[in-house]
Length: 191
Image (cartoon, rainbow, N blue to C red; front, side, top):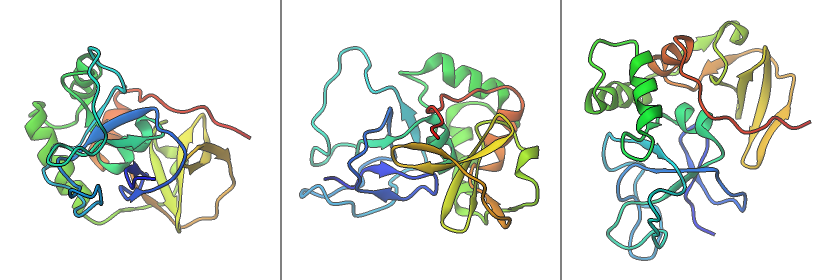
């Protein structure tokens, strides 16, 4: 099992559950397909699993590392943005909702990179945040949707009633884009 599944914390883990989205951060693996760095560049993107019939061998030496996400909400929480090639319409919608003046991909990437490296702000009332935002309480991540918190697992979301002490996982600029109308693709919430 490869360590290329992304959590909402941005960590790379090896789990058997499959992802509904892929993406990358550059070449993160060595010739033995072991992860050797967290990122190579500031362009962290989330892509469609299929695009123009392209097929790749996962973790080909010297090629970008294929990462997998449960859903787009997970990818956004980890600090990724929609790909401007395979998801042009989603990228355009994300850029239109982006809260900063410069909305080209490199400028978005620069802001997201700074926010990924910064402190995670405390959140007093997660229910004031837009749907699609993720917060953490201790080691657990939670998706906000429909006025409720749902605990993230690699295989999907579970209904949950977490304690207080939340921090924001989704980068603040992405939260602003969600508040301004960008709607991420989200996995179904289970029981």
